[in-house]
Image (cartoon, rainbow, N blue to C red):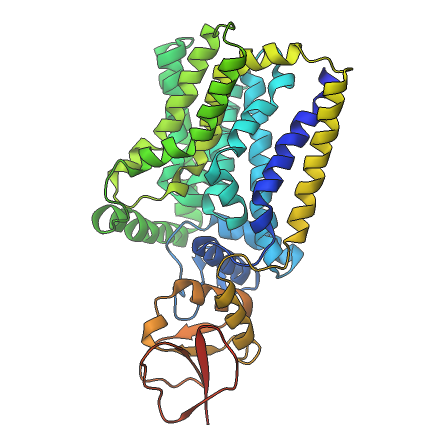
Length: 467
């Protein structure tokens, strides 16, 4: 069976491509990812620096909303590959490829027998989570943080085998990377050793205490190094904490209940629950393994450790919990792995049905690739807005300021598209002194007399020029 596993992986990868194909290479992106791509592109072109990223001249000229590591990493892709919309998509996609590899490596540390034959299982559960496929083309910071949080867990597992202190230090550095990607939310794997101690009972309290202490030390040691070597880095981190953390907890509310994040988690995991019920229906005689049940609880609690603390704040979004999904996927895969192994042993690799499955997996993969390419250069979300930005960008010079009326000053995606595609900053200050002025077609804004309309057919706006 070992040499016949590729259809399972091809099917998983093909299904993923089918799901993301409409958005993977099409134009238009979720606001946050659009802004992050703009910051990264700016950094690649020497606009701003690592500890002081730059968005636009008028909107966050020094961006302190998040730590800067993702922007720094993504800027390397822009430096190497140039400036087009496929750069951030490739970067974002590769974060999932790397995370998928780490999930497989974690799985092989947990499953002693048949790990190679079932390593596709947690990947399958992972890609069925709606937010996972949504985040791939949308360039979220959590995509990168997910690599570091998953790596930290892998290194902790490795520390139980050999080179204990080395792997604990690597786990700590990974958590430091998680913090520099998205902040304190990346620290939830600190609980992993505790859940192992509490549930599996295969380490002593002394081992738990020493290992956790080493993990804490190796995580915060880089902060001390930064303080002495790059003092401005600490100022940048403190500005992030004041703006994004303290202000969010005290003043920002995006949900009506603190339980929103738990409800969202349950909804996102529904596809996994359905697959579990399906597996039980076909293998109701197979019993659960006590060893796997304990591992299931460890990873379930690890995932919840990354979700429940978010209830402190009333600022909650579903994609905040993206880095926990690899662990939930591993947890539920552990719950049904014996059932899947039972079914796989019944497969006759030389039979007609398996040959059909092999050809079907190749077909699914090929269709997925074809649909991704077919949808490239098309416009997905914000179609009319992007068309208008492109038309205006052909007239207004790059690296310039474009005046906008007050009504559209808070259209943040408009800021993002102009900055991402044309290096144009939107100036909403009154009085208006810029050469060009953009006005909403349906507003009652009184255009200053020194401006005349530019004969340009736009969907939602009108462009004026000083005469």
